[in-house]
Length: 325
Ligand code: ARG
Image (cartoon, rainbow, N blue to C red; front, side, top):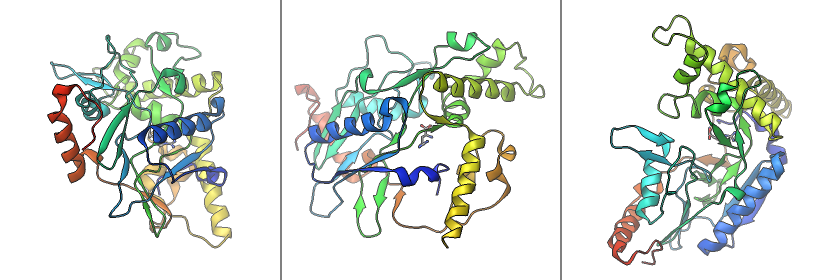
């Protein structure tokens, strides 16, 4: 419904991980996923399917929204160091025993929290598993001085994979980035890294008024920087104009085969320059189809998740991060 990159689906590599049960093996499988998807920068779409949900069996869940996430540290004055979106996950990781680096920074990798039945474990990701790109701009050197970076592969890990007959609560999947996801949302939104005011100021624009469109100018510079930096480092990324054209090609191909394409307009249309892209100028059906990825309640908000956290907190004294209930 939400993916603009569907022309790539036919190249999807599926890793069958349905026999795995041990948290250590699951973590290993996730590292394999990351390595294969990263493919040395030539990112390919991958999904890993873990055991299906059955009422009498241990449920497998990854608590992180994505395998790679940057920590968000809530500071006493109310501001956040890092990604404000991940403050809750960061606090959960800390409550399970994870220690942030001695000098916390804006782009610290969070551990992956894996639940198998009643056991909850966290695993640290080393930077060698995570390809990242430093953000630079071909003409504005101050962008490099801002020390911005982003990871190469978004692996969504908290959605439920519904085949139509079975539910897989753990089935992480990944494609490659669309520049605007990073440049117009993650680093730009005022409730994320909020970098537009600084970029505009360094461009010499007056941020006390709106009519000079300082935000828009800053957005274009930041989005140019994202695409350019990924290109320079040989990491695959799409721009929103090409991705829009590709999506419409996909719709055409599907229609030729007699199939309708369902989509959510607000997700397909990019967050900048919407009307300058081809996907803006039409509407889409919204018929649910299977197989599909669906949203599920955050793991720590389920009855089971709350029980596990409460039990783990009870064990803090023994300094255990691993819980066997
Ligand atoms: N929007 C999310 C992010 O910026 C990633 C969602 C999946 N995106 C993708 N290109 N497969 O991290």
